[in-house]
Image (tube, rainbow, N blue to C red; front, side):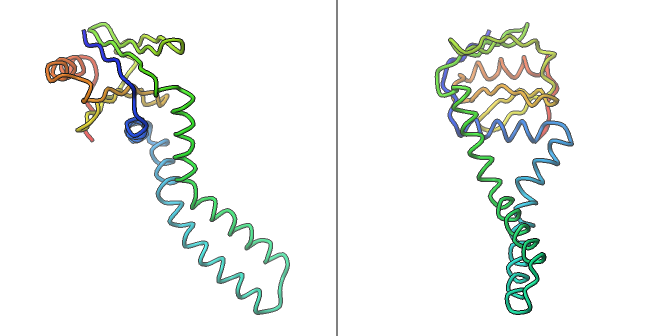
Length: 179
C-alpha cells in the first residue's frame, strides 16, 4: 500500500487540469484548444479589423447600425482575448473552493484508491473508474476522461520505491496513455 499525505500546490493543480483536459474526450480537447489557443489569436486579428472598420465609419458618413455592430464585435473580441486569463482565475477559485491547500491523503492499494481531505471528503475509487494514467517528470495523474475527474500524485512526495510500486499498480490496472 502507498500512502501520501501532502498539500497540492496551485501549480501542480494547473498542470493536472491541463493533463486531464488533454486526455479527456475528443470534443472536450477540441473545445479547450479552441477557447484557450485559437480563439484568442483570431480575436486579436478581429480587434485590428474592427478598429479599422470603426475608423472608416468615423471618417465617412456614420451609419449607426454598422457602428453598433462593430462595437459589439469589438467587445466580443476583447472578451475572447481575455478568456485564458478568465480561465486561470476560474481555476484559482476552484482550487480554493476544493481546499486543496490543506493536507490531504491518498491511499493506493491493489483494490483501489482512497482520497481523503479531513472534514471535506473521503472517496474510494475502484481501479476500473479510471481509464487513463499519465506520468510526467513531476506528476502521476489518473484520469476519468468522460467526467474530467483526476487524482494527482506529485513524484516529490513519493520515495523511489513507492514510485516503482505505483508504476506496477498502474500498469496492472490502468492502460498507459502516451503523452
